Length: 280
Image (cartoon, rainbow, N blue to C red; front, side, top):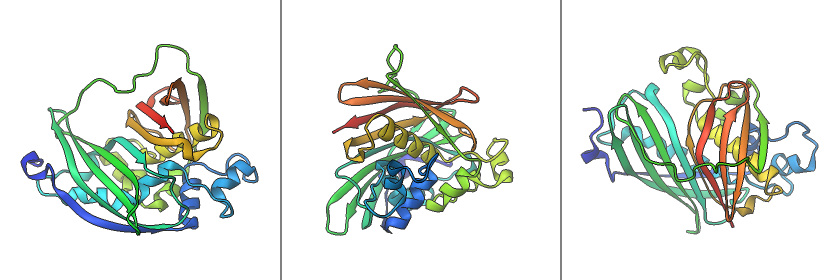
């Protein structure tokens, strides 16, 4: 059996270290659409110019990418990487992320479900600064087609009323090629032949790129650009985006949280569901 929960569950992944500076933050911001449509707009320059640089909360997924990739070497987890899709992502911010830092990330295989159609594997990770401060916690959930399945009721179902905000975020046809420079070099997002092996006609946009694009849309469109108001941000990846499509994000104000749903404008297909930002 390729996936053996008895071996994999609870396995501690090798700790990783990661450093970033303003250039890495700016590259990430460009990868999720910052600087458009007017690169001289002061609101956009706050993401793309090192003076008074602020950091999107979703950047906190970048330091743990190498750690999470270690799940493919965990005992009891053997599968075809072309069958792996990002299922869910949640980040909790313990403090605003700085424009430069050296951090250490630790993690473990926290949950596994195997129900027939696909396996769901969750990595829980903690990232701390070099002086020991906890910066953020991530939960990375992978859906591995052909190895099991998952179910359950959405925790953040969209209200049955019109959204309070509707935000549009165009993507470039080269968006995935730019985003992959932040660390996710999965050929699914660049190589047409590999994408076909995974069942896609062309390379698709990274789920975490869509995650960041929606985060920026909500921070700018609802929170007035204040990145410090985001306490946590969790989503379920409900469908794919092809580079060049436009993400349409619906937002419902629900007290201390914003419930979100995103779809493609061109195909009307869901992209993010069961999604919410908890506010400070």
